[in-house]
Image (cartoon, rainbow, N blue to C red; front, side, top):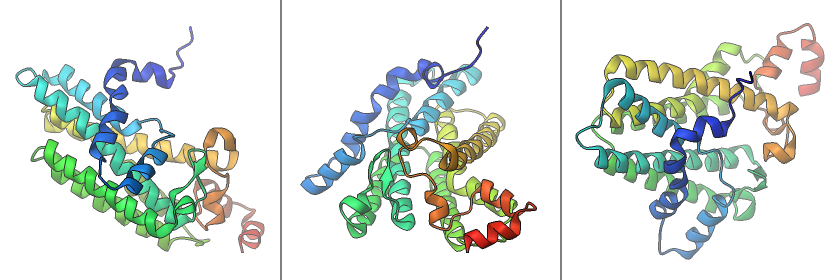
Length: 272
């Protein structure tokens, strides 16, 4: 029997709320500024996998089934889950825009990045606008546990980004340091998304911690596969130029492992 799960299989229980995410993103980012509206439409014309909203909804669903949460005020909680899911995606989009500026990336999801199409000055301000709107929505629809969770996660992402920037072109970068960067830069937001859904439903602390640990492990595995695809994927499917990290001096696990092998001398020669 074929037990391989596809993304559609995993998303099946949350398909309805996920279909509402594009409209909620548009609503959250609505502004009278016509240029910003054009850029928002352009950026989200190629949607990603909506992984972070999916984790919000899955976390909420697990909390409800395990703890029986959300029975008394389910309507309000459904609204919170939807808006927080959209906020996670907008928050993630802000980090992608800033990443692309830092890395001088040319493609994102198969189309030119904002820094290529509108220039880095406009792109950084759009990233700030996304971040501001996401946090405003989180403060509106989050609770006393969700808000500090997001603020802590935002700090971890910045910490990871700065550490990654400082480690560029470092031929002595260790695997442990690299994995810590991945934990902060990528995995922390996936864990935050999963825990956010659980917190909306009132999950107990022990299970909430387990959600966080799973989110971190899942996020790190996700990023390691993404780093592998940066070398071995197909550009048409990957949505960006292959080898972009290496070109910008970002050494991911395949390069770190190569530098730790018997081929180190040749690898250093090529990298320099």
